[in-house]
Image (cartoon, rainbow, N blue to C red; front, side):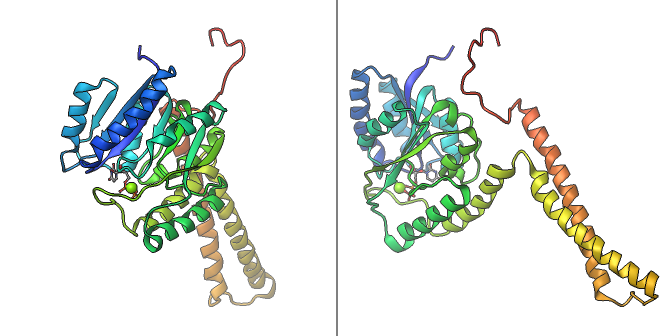
Length: 323
Ligand code: UDP
Ligand code: MG
């Protein structure tokens, strides 16, 4: 039986050798204060295939300090994968994520925890006074935040801020791949998560380099389309494909009906009419979309049933006894 603890701090690490010792010291001082008020904690460093001394440093810290958990990837899998691995091994009731580059401030952690104690499931940091270049980072991020909020219906000022706290049952129920870690609050909407945003401190990066450039913006937009689909139609793909398919084939049907009428009732030649091709195209495309929808439905069922997943999440059961 895995021992339960209160707080797991998950930190993805990719080439952060200069930052690690300082980060560890700062985190430790905050977490020790929480420990003195009765909270047990662990710090999970996920080394995402660093090519510098990061893993050596994590190991050294871990040998001395048993509150440290180190996960070492075989190669660089990306920040999202590192967070996902951290969630998997975390034992805490609350999982806190943050960057390993000292841009987030561990001093904000107690304030995040306060909000969790008030009953929120996710507390998201908002870098109100962001210390990054305006044109290449802050501006694209503002536009992206506006777009993500509009599309997903989960309104946040700062999706990109890594400093967040999650109730662990929510975090452990999230499936995310690719570059999707920033969408976690949106992806948790179907789970019925209560989300709040609080302003947090932000510092410029002093050691090491940022791992991302402007190309990230485009990847984020592509992921957003997928997230929208996952949010609204994951359990009912036939509605998207089927709806469009039904409309197209209906349109095609009426076009063909009109042409047939022309031929049969008025004996007009229809072989050279562009409308004939158009009608056929509409009809065939429509039928294909409907079939795609049906196949997507089957895949959805395989997804849920093969993994024993349920399309709902129970918060609690009254008088559960042996259920
Ligand atoms: N990171 C990672 N794998 C990667 C890229 C980044 O684990 O492939 C980590 C990185 O070490 C840092 C966090 O993710 O702890 C955020 O990265 P970064 O500071 O470069 O992002 P930015 O703050 O510039 O958005
Ligand atoms: Mg950073």
